[in-house]
Length: 149
Image (cartoon, rainbow, N blue to C red):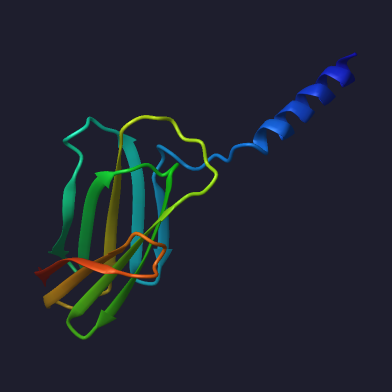
């Protein structure tokens, strides 16, 4: 009897998991690619208050960039890469809608923090580019001059 119950629960679990996918939510996701450390998280939010335009700052040996917008890690995959050319830093952030996921219907704030390290002291021009269609097209959302110490 116990085996039948366990088998029935397993079949129900497999059947239900085929109809919906889960995606990360709540916990920060961290990726490191060369000089870029990219952290993404989402948190509950109130309508009308969860938007901070992309911004960059210079720190000791690095440039940091961050932004907050509406969205969730359940519904949106976020990735990034950085390019450094002379005194210019290009941060490419890609947002992709996840297909086939079932997410909680709540307002959430999606925040990313990027750190591009290994830079020499001096002034850098930071270009932050966003792609909403998986990287096919990019929009430059911020150009900012920062001082790296």
